Image 1 (tube, rainbow, N blue to C red):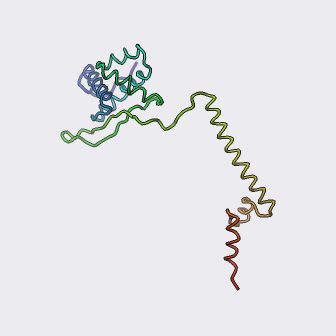
Image 2 (tube, one colour):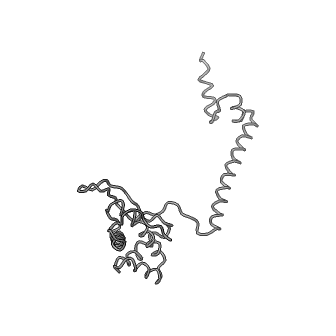
Image 3 (cartoon, rainbow, N blue to C red):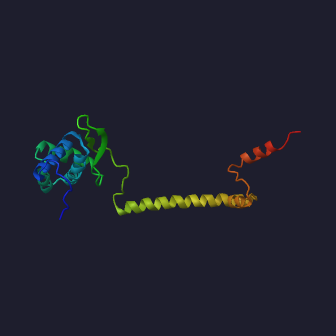
Length: 192
């Protein structure tokens, strides 16, 4: 059983509250953003996100479910044709609440509820094979870096220079560039 919301209802009665939330959701889909109180924004957000999730799959059943809440056919069209395709790569979190301060007249805390239109930053592979290929490519790059570092260490050991690990143990500074080492030695020697 759903847990009822604590405290007074937004409109006084449960029926009035449902009407308020339906109208807010409808205005959100029509305009893309609405300015309302923080309480109303927090209450309409789950309803709006559920409707967007339904609209992502355009079927007769989903259209009928959305039409139960949103009665304006133009807004339903906007939801299915414009908003839902933008959310194709997103698995929730379709809306954002931003606090904007208090209202001038009654000092009520206000917020902007808006639909997030930017594309999600993280893209997931289309299937398991693509994911495995990405993981294998990253592992190969790490292995190649290790092999290159080992070759550099072997070359230094063959030339008689101390490796980075041996230099750290001896307490000597590690010289990163071989060309810089002779220049430092020349600076230390006094000129005659």
